[in-house]
Every structure is written in structure tokens, then in C-alpha cells.
Image (cartoon, rainbow, N blue to C red; front, top):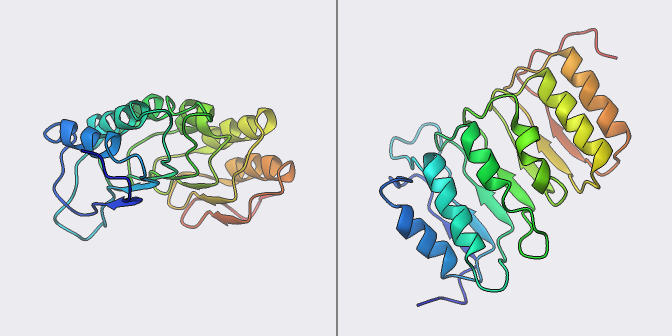
Length: 199
């Protein structure tokens, strides 16, 4: 039975498992068509954590894509959920803007690696707020982002990249892409390795 009134599903710091609770997660999302926000994130200090892992992302995406007509989901928060790079092509399936438009995506504190933007490129045109803090991004990641800015009509306004592996080289890549895009208003580069020789 679907519920047309719930617009935000927040289940932080539970003990949900992407493997054990796959069908439950998919059912919750598929059968609540009014949902606009789904939040399965964890906080660092809480011992009771969700562990959605990549299977949980698969459940979320399948639930969205199997919604009738279109999905109203705009925000997905999966911080601290033991995700890897393999979940990114799954998220990229949410690329049809006539069916779903992801405006806010929080993937912080997951081991995603430097190729994040290559995988997320299909959905980057609709993302307004992106949190990739502590996800192992590096200088090549910034070069990839620069290329996406060059080839895609971007809506990005908030970008959180703190606690990554970005040096002055990556900062310069990022600076070049931001010169061609005046929509970005908030940029967090704290706790990277950016030196004093930036241009």
C-alpha cells in the first residue's frame, strides 16, 4: 500500500544492511511516490550504523526507477555507508531528467576513488548540491570535473570536497572550470594538500 503524503524518509544511524534489507529498501522507495528526500546516512561517532554498501544503492535506484510515471526524489544522502566506486554507475542510471532529477547528492566518507566524476557525468547536469568529502578524490578528479563543466550545462551551486587528496594542480583545474561557470556559490576545499603556489 502506497503513501502519498510522506515526502522525506530519514533513517540515519540504524543498522540497515543493503544485502539483508534490499527488498525492504526498494519497497519503501517504490511505494511512496511522494518522497523527495531519502537519507540513510551515518554520523562518524555513532556505533549504530547503516551498512547499505553497493547493494543498498542498487535497491534505492531500482525503487526509484520502478516508480510509476516518474519519481519525485530530489535528494539522496548516503554518507558513511561503506560504498565503493562500483555504486557510481548504478547512480548514473538516474540520468533521465524527464523521469527523475537528483538535485542534492551526499556521498561523503565513502571509498569512492578518483574516477567519481567520470561515472557520475550522466547525472551531473541536474545536481545542485554535491558532497564528496573524504572520498579519495585527487588532481585527475578535478581535471575530469573541468571537462564536465566544459561539455555540460551545469546547475551546481554547492560543492564540498574537503578531506581529499587535491593539491595545487587539482586546484588549478578546478579554478579553470569555475571561471566558465558562475553558478557555484559555496566551495569547501578544507583539509586537502593545496600549497602556496596556486595560480
